[in-house]
Amino acid sequence: MWPVGVKTRSDGARLRVGIDGRAFASPAPGIRRYVAGLVRGLLALGEPIDVVALGGRDSSALPPGTGHVDEPPHPPTNLGWTLVGIPRAARRAAVDVIHAPAYTAPFWSPVPTVLTIHDVSYELHPQWYPYRRDWMRRTFYRRSAHAASHILTVSAFSASEISAAYHIPRERITVAPLGVDETFRPDEPGPPGEIPAGVMAPFLLHVGDLHERRNLPMLVEAVLAARRRSEARPAISLVLVGTDRGAGGALRALAAQAGAPEAVVPLASVGDRQLRALYRHATALVYPSLYEGFGLPLLEAMASGTPVVASRAASIPEVVGDGGLLLDPVERDAWTRAIVDIVNDGARRVRMREAGLRRAAQFTWARTARMTLDVYRRVA
Image (cartoon, rainbow, N blue to C red; front, side, top):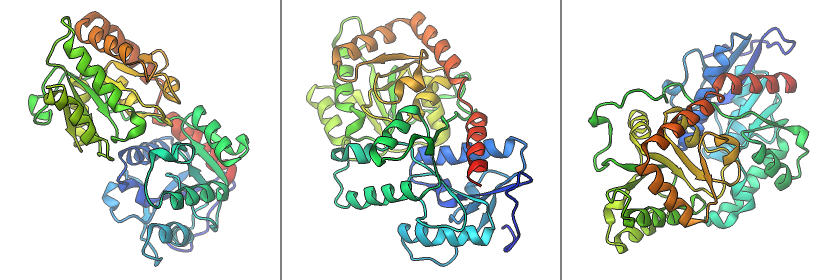
């Protein structure tokens, strides 16, 4: 824990940044990867910066070298933590800047606040989030965006969406693309025990929560059509890694109605080691999403040497570039043809693997950290 009451410097000598400590144990894997990769990158820059986790109940999740302050008294809700707990923790830690890395930020604080907004799908497409109190979340997110000193986001697409949705000047928004953890790499496949039970090669992989905007019914239909093609390997299956947000039952029903229940293999959650093994063993990552602020699984797959087939929508072309195959997200026949071709054409898989590795090499946490540090210094 950092000592209480220590004076800080905002004159370039040393910068102290407080990051919402709850993010390190967020239920959203993408948020956990973001804060862990960012903080490791910041601490590896060799710059005069201290990073302090403000609160959070699991300090074991913090990257080495990260400071920590316990949560001060606050109302026992997420809202109470954000509005009351974080400012109190920031004062206790004597930081120069608060970084709220996932959509919500204090409406007031003793120091400037940087807020990361990954996308605004919930604001522009509320039909994908039919929760009873979703309007409250959207209101909280909007107010947080206007209260922040500066906004970070992960793609140019998201920057334009945030500016349009919240009427925030573009100069208040900085794009700092995500990086990829070095553990995602094209090593030799691990022992069979790393692959979860029930997964058999050849398989296609999708990583991400199962909900409407991921466009998965179209993908299941394309996989089923590919299995019926005489030139395709009939055993191809689709492995779905992610929390079921209400779409999983319909996907399994599609496969069962086609007489191929084994074609869809849902895995609610896997460990990091199993996830890396799934990437390495997959014939391809298939990602037909209709809307993404970034799409970290795309980057993880390319870095793992896994061919990527993804939709030509939202931020996805920014991430994939020439490192994968981009398709119209609603053209099922095009997805079917791509699946058949990739399953049967080993030479094409090699070419896609090499293109993906070249593309992924451009995305590092060091770059993300450098761009983020520049924002911290500007607001401080």
